[in-house]
Length: 153
Picture 1 (cartoon, rainbow, N blue to C red):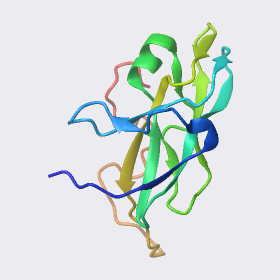
Picture 2: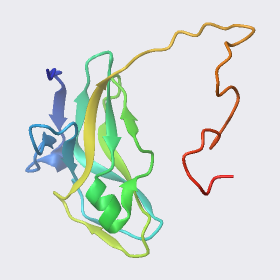
Picture 3: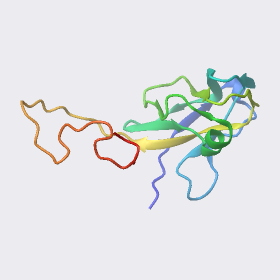
Picture 4: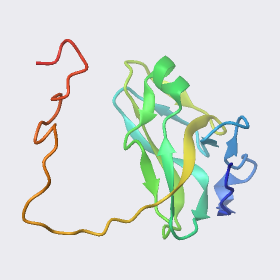
């Protein structure tokens, strides 16, 4: 069962004429979001791309900004802080921090799909400080300690 969460959205002046974020298919978890500006993203360059809107998420929710898999695979374009988080109390313009990991310039046109947005419930932690933690089979084994790749040492 899918739950629909009401999210208020404000179109900013430079966002007029652009589609609001939308699900491409009935089974999509993320909504496609488009650029409200035109730019050239040079190799290794980062840019906070305007979307032309702001949102008011309900308390207890966040909006995650995630890369589009096609842009990442075909062009080396990804979200630098993936997943980015838009908090429920943020009211500024939603921007997408894109980075070009390729060796080629990448042109973004106004209206190009640049990322996905996923609205998710937030679970808040309540710290319980203790003197000792319970033992587990993994223990203090860190990065790569569980194996899974022949090249790990």
